[in-house]
Image (cartoon, rainbow, N blue to C red; front, side, top):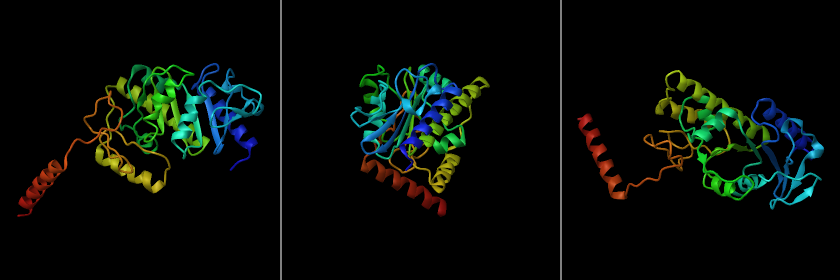
Length: 269
């Protein structure tokens, strides 16, 4: 684990990156890093992320109470704390307003299509968490149902949220998310994006597994969730951004298996 000073330097560096890339404007966005079970470094309110210095950062506990520092934490810290409470594997969270990804969030279009290998491997589907008033418990409550299965979220009419096992990992997911949204936007203007076939998506899932990529992976439309816990169906509409629960009963499954077996035996004969 890095020292507190190194962690604070890294937060300032990521702040400059999201500002210079146009992922935030003015004082938008916030960054946190969890350094212990009850210790989190966070960016202050009212400061541009492009001009952060280590002395501005604040250490808070899991209740959001300041334990180190003189600045005031962002009112959106509640959203970060909810991620840490529900995902013990997460050590860093980035919230920003990347233009293309945020445009999809404003338009109400989740990023669930398999159109780019890198996005399939590192992100999978990215749903839209329902709108909540900033600085209230509405946003933490809105993202809660998505946290177990997703590592990146769009926030309806608001922005984007990414999180990972360290700060660079969380930040790179934000870069990938906006690049994915930009390519999908441009492809749609050229006549429509073409999806990667389910078979090729499955191959990408094997690549992800071999690479040992950490985190949760929800797959994309038409492909199996990486660890087999859920599946997003091919016929899922854009408004259905979460995993669809199977309605098949045991008798239905038995009938399907029997019919498939019968057809296979006919082919063998």
